[in-house]
Image (cartoon, rainbow, N blue to C red; front, side, top):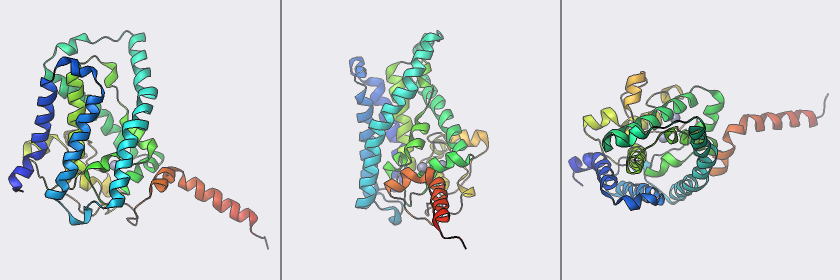
Length: 294
Ligand SMILES: [Zn+2]
Ligand SMILES: [Zn+2]
């Protein structure tokens, strides 16, 4: 595939997603699942692209990686989404009504302005939550399984410990009133950028795109296996611009990703990871109390 075309694929996909939401019949917007369909279609296309425009041979998807990734995509679309709606979105909407927060003026703004607002508000939350996860020992325990992946692929953004997946899904978008098409477009664009930022696709988008949006170059450096300290940069999920503003931007790329000994974690290992220090400590204590004293 011609490199110049591959480089343009991330901005072209973002443009296609924007055009789709800007032009669909209003009645279609009542089907919330359409948002899921759009994200899944993008995910499927980018995952397929890995076969036609591979970035690193070492990241090539095998059966084990594929089924683990598919499991996490399904888990995110069902359990994590339900948890987010129940524990975050519903209480936020109730608080919005109780406090009388009303922002009808937002729906009167141009479509692209609203899309940009959705992305910026959501990404600000993502950026600080992600940065906090690299600064708090307990939160790092929840986020670390995402960094223990030893290769990057389109679906890898969905892989992690459930506590982290829930925390990173939080946002205050529900506090505001949006034109539904703009809201769905903002969420889809953010997801599209984040999918490309984890994908094993040799796309190096134009400077204007990589100045604003996170690319695989930026995000692979965030996943570097070099050391934990070296991962503390390029936190932006979709907006690398936030790293440039808040001073955490670093230039470069990493083809070797992972943490510690670069041991790939199984799903059960990913789920118990935050509790592993306590499990080890309890086991040690039990072993000490049962060992014969002399
Ligand atoms: Zn991280
Ligand atoms: Zn990642």
